Length: 229
Image (cartoon, rainbow, N blue to C red):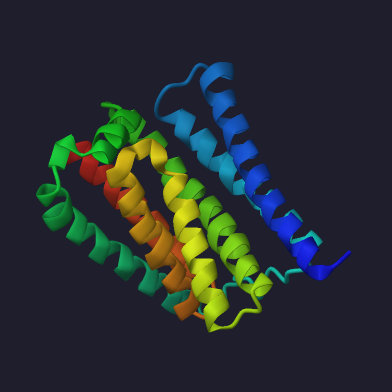
């Protein structure tokens, strides 16, 4: 089989199968177990991390992508962790002190949706942390580890290829958060799509920094929305 065709099929399989795992896991939590908040999202996060992670590694194996070369490494993890945490804190401060208040506050579509997801009880917030921790990591496995790296390789991994791959990931990541309305699409496109992709390239195609930045922002957002909105 042609290497490019193998890579294209792997990317499509990884994307479709990852979301199939996520949907099936959420169905288990909501319909199978009757959960609405809290543990529902912990279960979803675990499914995205373990099931989605397995799908990504399987797709990489078929595409002959080296997981270490795609970012699954703890090399320079300490510095990447600090960078990722700093990015999350800066973005969190900008959002809650400037952007959200200036663009509608509690009336923003993403704030309304995320507030409903979080629920009103402490147990709901604690349960949501499972999605913030595990689900964010699972999304990074897919969007940065497989899709960004794999698409760039498909486009010969030069500067033009990396730019095109980044644009594709921005669009896919933003659209995957369409349930949050236009505010959510724009915000997730700029942060989860653009910022975390640039962070991945800047840190030498390593996943620790974008994973930490993704987790950090989700935790900050959850606590901020829970207490302020």
